[in-house]
Amino acid sequence: MKQDMIVILDMGGTNNTVLARQIRSLGVYSEIHPHDITVDEIHALENVKGIILNGGENRIVDGQAVDVRAELYESGYPMISVDHPTSRCEKQYENLPDDERLKEFVFGQCGAEPNWNMKNFVEDQAELIRRQVGGRKVLLALSGGVDSSVVAALLLKAIGQQLVCVHVNHGLMRKNESESVVEVFKNQLHANLVYVDATERFLGKLAGVADPEEKRKIIGGEFIRVFEEEARKLDGIDFLGQGTIYPDIIESGTKTAKMVKSHHNVGGLPEDLQFELVEPLKQLFKDEVRACGIELGLPAHMVYRQPFPGPGLGVRCLGAITRDRLEAVRESDAILREEFEKAGLDKKVWQYFTVVPDFKSVGMKNHERCFEYMVIVRAINTIDAMTADVEKVDWEVLDKITKRILEEVGNVNRVCYDMSPKPPATIEFE
Image (cartoon, rainbow, N blue to C red; front, top):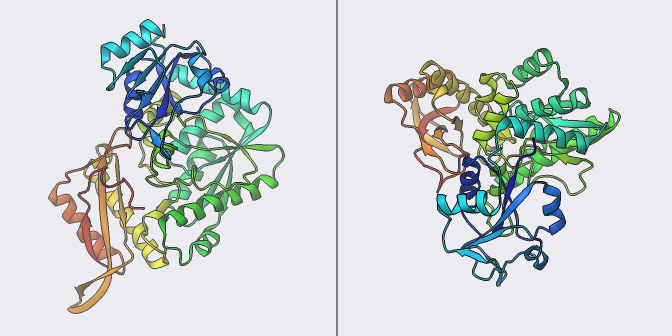
């Protein structure tokens, strides 16, 4: 069943995601698009019932107030404007529409039906994938994280054996992560899975690189090169599947929003990319991605597993990556995950991990002065990854984690707990 849609056009609003989620909570699908979208592009979205021009403090770009293309005002779609005084919409609001005004627009003026649910979303996306791909093949970057796992399940539903999954072990995976990916996807889900061990290749490219943005782009670019090499070994690969979700796009910046950080699947793609992208989750928030995974029949332990960034431990080994610090991150992360599971926190806390910065501190070991690294523990809760609060972990649990890390992880003499919410901090350190 085709889902009715309300399109939000980003005219510099800082609350686009809030508005989209507000509309979706009414049972109506909503997507956010750039202000300069064309009428033909709107038509191509299908089942668009109305448009909201969402202005705000960022609506001035290069000294000019952004506006939609003139023909959009004549397109016949019901439209309202929020915080955009120069628009030509008949109805304008100074603030975010309250529930009653929003309902009146969505259901009254637009005539939308409340048919937004995961069952319909999955069916719609499967049909769109089939239409886009046809009889050709899709190469999927399968990290084994939540986003790529859900994309894999959706692509398997849509095109079956036309999907070829490639798991790249870039040497930046968590402890035993690659082994787990192979077991689940190859042996249990019977997906076409190609395993590539590119540890030395990636670490060589990253040697001496300290800037986090450059690290992300190197990792993203190298991923694509590996996929291109694997694709040349196969016949008929024209598409690249990705687990891009909406917070990835927002944080990578738009014309009216500043970049927080680039994501390897948004800002790190090379300009000469040889594939057409298939990104069926790119308009979903993290909680919706999980709901999609459950609808697709994925096991709960996979859907609710720890989020893991595409660059992996590369953005948790802060600064230029060294093998000793990378190993310290990997081992301390394994200890943290083990102790959180014992304490039942793995089912309560949304994301938890360790990082190791690129500086040392003075300490004492075996009655002698030592100069070693520290491990920082982070544990946060969030719904949509746009904001996050710090988990208040019991002292006894933190004490046990600290003692184990100091005893079992080499070249470490200090453990700290990160108390910073998002904002002003981000979820990851880099």
